[in-house]
Image (cartoon, rainbow over all chains, first blue to last red; front, side):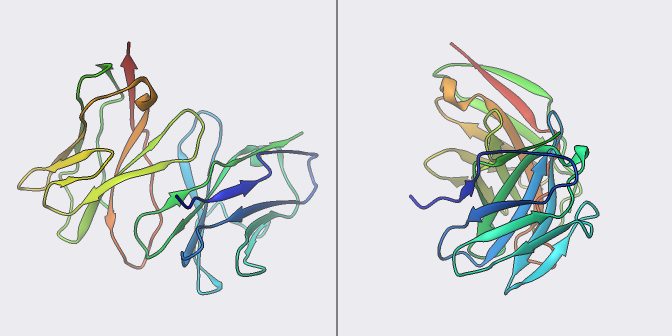
Length: 112
Length: 112
C-alpha cells in the first residue's frame, strides 16, 4: 500500500541553524501539507500546497518557514533559523483530492 | 468548520466493540465527519468519513444520527493495537480550506 515517507526520522540542530525536512508524498496525490505537534500538545496545521504554490498557511508559518516541491516526488519544509520553540514532531501529509489526508511517520526536530 | 466535543478518555476490553462518540451540533449541510487516530507519537491515520449515511470500511463503522448532530465511530473487535487518540473532525470535504483542525480527541485504552 502506498504511503508517505519522511526523512530524517530525528533531526538535532543548534539554535539559529537552518534545517530541511523532507517528505515523499504518495505518487498520484496533488495536495501536500505540513503539520507539527509540540510534545504533549495538539497537532497543528502549518501549510498546504497545491499546483506548485501555497494555498493556505497558518499564523505559525512565518517568514522563517518555506516549502518547496523541488522535483516530481519530494516536498520539503525549510526552517531558516531555528528557535528552541521549533522543537516538535513535523508531519507531512498528502491527498489525492482536497479530502482524506494521509500522513507520514513524522520527523522529530530537536533544537538545542 | 463546526466544533466537535469528544470524551477525554475511554476504556474498552480487548475483543469487544469500542464505541467512540462525537457531538457536532453546529454541523452544516456540506460538512463531512472525519475520523483519524494517532497511535503514540506516530502520524495521524485516516480511518473513515461520512456525510449523512452510515459508512463501513475494513477498519471501522461510522454511524451518523439522522439530524447529523452527533456520530459514533465503532471499532467492532478492539485489539491492543487500537489503543490510540481518536479525533473527530468536521469539515467541508473540498473547499477553500483543506486544513484539518485537530482537537484533543479521545484516548481509547484497550485493556487485555
